[in-house]
Length: 374
Ligand code: SF4
Image (tube, rainbow, N blue to C red; front, side, top):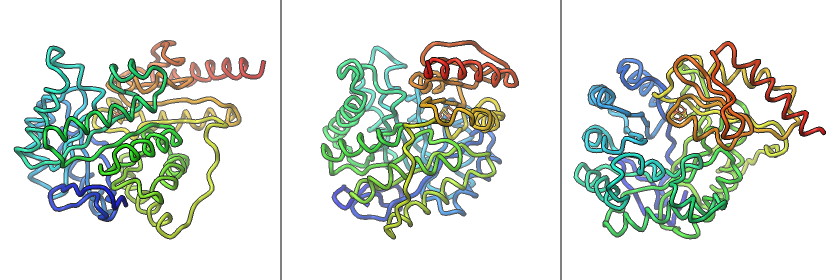
């Protein structure tokens, strides 16, 4: 736990300033399905979740959130993606709001980012909720990407630091920062660099899209084992691709990794950069087809023969983040309601029905392997 960080309050939970590391998770149910979401919140809570995130994309989700709030005393966090103006509507029902600096430019283009952040901070202050500045590798703010060219780590760190300075100037200090990437080594680099720059800011740790078990846990360990012993990390999430009924495993593994690190039990891990690397998102309310998790498992199963090839395959559950988050993978699949788009890096190969995409993926994979062995 970062003892040098300042203390942030999320209702009755303290994060940072030497408080125990809080473990969190996120609902993968449709937020509008109030019964299923409340059930998943209860399950996560009963497994020891300190904070539970839900996704809110529209007015229907906000109405559902108000209902959910009445049915649970869990500490709730809402994840704003492109639709940052929803902050005003969700704030009365939650304890923390996450905004992504890389998504603020999409709406109300005539308003400056500074003005948008000031507005969000004002709402958070008014309702007594905390904020998370959640910077993500797949959606870094375009101005920072331009300014720092190909230096992705620098772009992520500078973007986070810029938002901290802005919030501090606005005299809003009840916030944490996350710098996530699907590559655990990048997570280590980004978080070390950020902590040198702003040792006072509490950090939310996570390897985004860590994927399926057991690799998802191993990847997460790679990052957490290097950061937590340095005092970097005040709250964490293990982002795993799991069937809905198994979502509580994120909490189980979060606590397990923490316990091992605290007992100095470090698990030696393979170098993920040396073989086939499958990244997949943990799914959330935005998943439009329940077959996403099955598809991710099928991708893992049928690509096993390529395990010694240095190839990354990304499988994402929705069309909100899927297109951007698959750009850097050698092969990417992002799921729509009825079709899956297959990509070769940032270029689309085509859209396929769920049951037709696996042969197309194998065809692309075989071609990549052939190029590699030539
Ligand atoms: S990629 Fe889409 S479905 Fe997957 S976690 Fe991200 S927002 Fe949710």
